[in-house]
Image: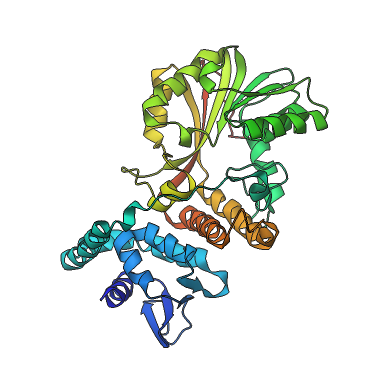
Length: 396
């Protein structure tokens, strides 16, 4: 029943692509592509275990991801990201809700799954070390969206573009005191000190990030101008001319948004500038992806632009510029995925087994797809402490 129902949903719901399923010695093509009916399908899915259909119907993206982790299916030519993009672009969950009988049939399957307890499996725990991030990130280990000046930019260029673009938006001047809240391995503070002459402080709650960032600053001869501290952002006390936070707000609980913006306002000088860079929600409802919540970023949020605006307004911070860079995340994540596939063989299989590696491939493929076809956003919001602060005619 589940196989027929799933394929029926896809056949009715996909209007701009065709997917070939190879299952049980049969080939079944679903969807409606553009042009001749005889055209080659956009992607081919090879099903090794037909339980995948029930898992997807019962648990949505979580079931799809766990099926991929278990090896229940493969996508020919490594086109998993393309498959996920097609599914996202056609908004299948919405179309299921628009068909009452189909929605009831899917709901019954999901209820049965809950009663069996599958939805409550204990999350596997992995100690993710630097070697995992070295397998797919750039040389600075910057784990956030880059900026594509050109569609052919490689990963090093994407991240260098992003760091420089942030520095230019903040109009950094030699001697400025820069604070980076959630600085990771310190790529931004090192870049800003090295190329713009600032005195930079980064705070992080990762001891590993802190130690490695300090080592990088020392190697670059910047220990006198770059300080990376193991500290919570609430503990920051001095004043700063510039405050930046990249890829950190996603991990701030909603109940702490007010405290987050209050702290930024507290430490920013009267003529200071700040910038928040965060994955965001570009829709009324912030629907958390269950696969990401369970396996990748538990308890993470995607703030809406309205929530960011309210936080800034409440604490006297004037919005100067807002940019949605989500399409640039597609280029960034595609590079991450390519690098991960190329280097996954170097990972210790005792530490990162096959299921973990497939989980990470699914996550990166999903990030590519979400950047291209979902209602996700990547906001960069520039703001000032002074409402009369001069504004340039152009963004950068």
